[in-house]
Image (cartoon, rainbow, N blue to C red; front, side, top):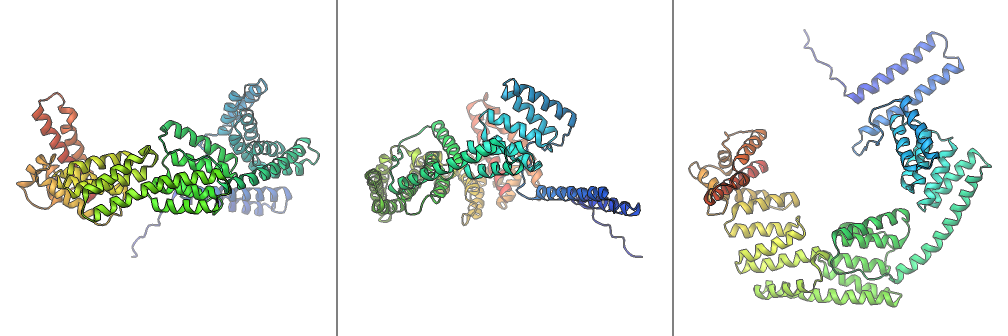
Length: 536
């Protein structure tokens, strides 16, 4: 007797696909059996069902793709009657001049019946009235997709694209409307407006390119800019760039805003969109480089910019920045040489002078972190662990994920006997730079030191448990959490949460000073044990 082999069940998507295919095949078979397959009406119906089935298959394939994002209206609720009611109410409100309330009603109608091109087009009309051209483009495009012969969808799409200063796409929408109704006056006017706007943009782009080549934009501030002001400037720049994607001035403003928000990698990527070799591109690349801490690269860019600058204002701003960067570079090289020659005090003094030259450390986070890290290296060379930690704390306050500072601070904590703090820094380093060479070995060593006591603050409770038991760091960690060998991840987490709730310092706020300190040490020991077991 053969062994029974169960057939694996298909997943939900596969089951749906099989069901649709079988239903379509069954329908065609029944038409043939009834002799109706030659009837034009039934043949058209079968073709339409096959077309809709294919559309559903394509939709299902999109939904299975990793990058799929579900549309806002695809919540599974469908009610044609309520959709009609919401649309009618929206029409009344729109006629009465209440565009915002009408937009909400049309949105509800689309949600309840997303297949209706009319609802999407009405939503586009309300969005245009509200000045939200971006939403109008989305809604009008959805309407045109659902019914390519719907005139109003193409007209509203064209108006919205004109509002977003996209004349080529607007002209295409208006021309499609003229194909549907050749004598439509609104479509004809739209084509003319799109052509005028395209001409204006060509002139503007020419002037813009000349300005970029000359580098005539104002120099970027090196001072501090508040987070809210920087965020507001970035939002404004993003909107301007979305409306004018080909405008170099808009691109430059966006890069400048990214720099003020300390998003250096994105700013550098934005520079690649500017004309290669232009003064503006070279200047902004230099701004990115020095703020990241790449001073020599910045100086090289500025030297090149001075050679190609076509305006006196462009040369002035490049010269001013080159003077600033040159002074910083001289101090950096002095600090580097002092450390290599075994003069940590000289290195620290050069780093302090460099930091003093910065108008605001938040305006050049990469460079500030590098200078603080270098000064911390000088403190480490003098075995001034507290001084090193102070500088590294300042660096990490500027950039919590600065991997070199995390690694060096863990080393400083280790030398100071602060083994739990050392371990926690290495855990942070694991998240910030998981590919750091030898990181796992450093984690295991830090955990072993913390669990074995060793005089580190926060490790006494863990050490007391571990000393009487012996064994590896993992075994010691299991004992700290009162767990048997081979405990699962779920058991580790459950034990940690239970003991952490008992020994958390907040629970001992009303106790005496000695009890508070003991609870704090116990809690840190629990953290070290849990972190080690999680890492393992």
